[in-house]
Image (tube, rainbow, N blue to C red):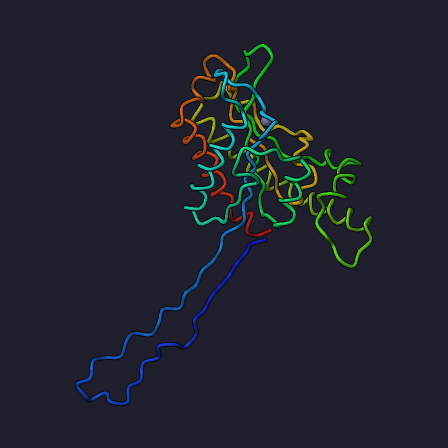
Length: 259
Ligand SMILES: [Zn+2]
């Protein structure tokens, strides 16, 4: 759903030409009609936060939650400059449950949910980037349970019907989410190289359960890997990754707007 708001000031400033022959200065030009369109609403979710630090990085004092928030703020700025309406699930180092993140997305009726994460592996030897999408497989009994807390309010229908409508709505989000995920991987491949491409993946990532809009989760890389982790400490590279994600979202904004 696109949020379009057109504000017209009306016929203020209409020029009166009563004394057209007089030497009076010309009337002020008609006030410009202000037309403001808000772009699709994108909710960016910086993974983890508060006591949930997420993956450890190569630096003892720096965790996934710090990286995701910093990247989310950069992504917000870039998407706003592209004309999108952008919100964050958190702007501080606070703990949010998965249900709360899903509830925020549904309550604000976001057009796109983008969760940012960074990876780590037990052996500290894995590297690469991947993008997850919510799959129909993830629409199961857990989702039904989750909607008790995070589902959108649907007036005039029974809870069972509301859950069914949620399922149908989610199924229509699959294609745009898959296209966007593929575009992000394409852009990341150009930036980070083919070797690190772990692909578009389908998984029932819990944070996506309950969301009724296209929802993706980007794992930008392994912050505990001796080489990749060091690279990801560089704010400049993180900005380039954000740019790759933002460009993919920009390319697919029409798909989002047509929902
Ligand atoms: Zn994570």
